[in-house]
Amino acid sequence: MRLTRFRIPLVLAAAALLAACGGGGGDSATPTPTGPTDAQRSAAATATAQSSTNLCAPIAPFYWEVGDRNARLASGSVNAAGNTVTYGSNTLMPIASASKWLYAGYVVQKRQGVLSASDIQFLNFRSGYTNFSICLQTQTIDSCLAYLNNGVYSAATDGQFDYGGGHMQKHASLEGLGALDNAGLAAEVRSQIGTDIGLAYSQPQPAGGGASTADDYARYLRKLLGDTLWMSAALGTHPVCTNPTTCPAGQAISTPIPSNESWHYSVGHWVEDDPVVGDGAFSSPGAFGFYPWVDASKTWYGVLARQDSAGSGVDSVYCGRLIRKAWVTGVAQ
Image 1 (tube, one colour):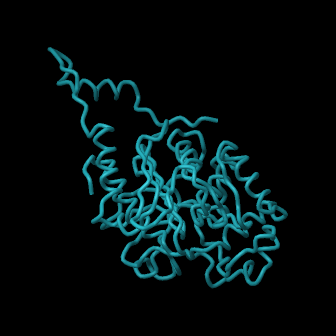
Image 2 (cartoon, rainbow, N blue to C red):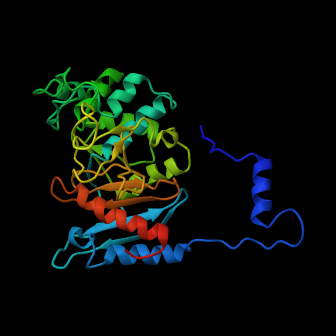
Image 3 (cartoon, helix red, strand yellow):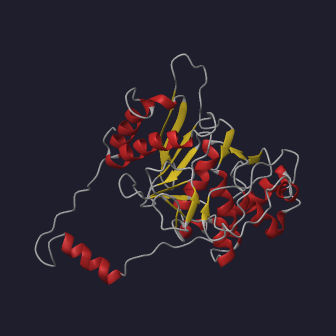
């Protein structure tokens, strides 16, 4: 089913057009388009990605792209001196927590956009399943849940945001997916978000075991911009406070975002709405540096793809944020 964007009623649209053209009588000029051209945006984003002086410089090598609902509009592979690795749009890599957005998209699509209160609590990480550590490659969803303390429920953390894989692991089990291994989980998720999206799992962990390419993940993001998945309407919904140092007491326990920024967490994805540096983008950065995003206006998407050590996701955010701003404004950052 294709979702339909809200449309301004015809009368209001006509009134707005008349106002923009100077009223209902006399000669009227064609409004002049405002904002940078795509060529200007592309030049600014490219200069930002390739800069040797901003926050993109330390994370090279990486691949980046920006596009709209129809296509990729700009992209590039940024290399690093002395490093022979080159990332491209088809480089397969672990996407870590970027897997969360895909699993959430799977659930929202399966529910046709109508989530239960339980779904929401699991998907914005307030379910109390906060003891997850790791899955093994040969396990199933349920055998991973039973491994170590992965499936142990904590009443003390129920209702509080705690970023971790246990919430989605338990949710998948409750969904009847417990017997699925890596291949089975990939097939199940793709059955809802699209079989045209390449996705594999290195461990049967919906929240962090995925592997994909920038090209494939971009297909998912274009679907969100094009309103062809129910997740389009779910972007930014049911947000919860996530920073233990700034949230009211009893709302948040743990976040991977640096404590000097306060974001909200929605349905399997972040809302980058820090009051100082945030721009409201929706995103799902992975621990190894894979960073997909959709801008706050739901007009543009972007992917920054690379594979680094665990904990490198926030560095990709800093660079990706600059590329996004350069694209939107047409000014290199």
